[in-house]
Length: 81
Image (cartoon, rainbow, N blue to C red):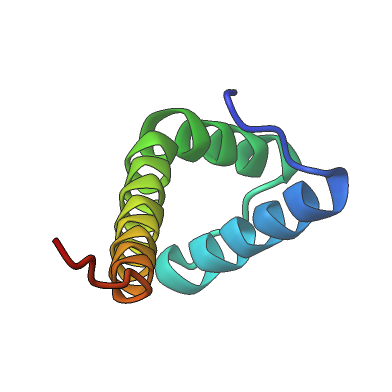
């Protein structure tokens, strides 16, 4: 896995997976199956979600840099020639 989660978060995610499978498929799965689902999601689907988060963060940073550039430009004083 490229992302490591603290044990309490990993446990919470496995519980959510178990609840989802029970609710949607009316099946109960154990810890091992939930762990396998979680590893699959993190390994195969996680990069899509992670990359989207990076893209969103990049857009926010670009907006902030643009605003800083405008703010700094507004501080310039005219120079008489």
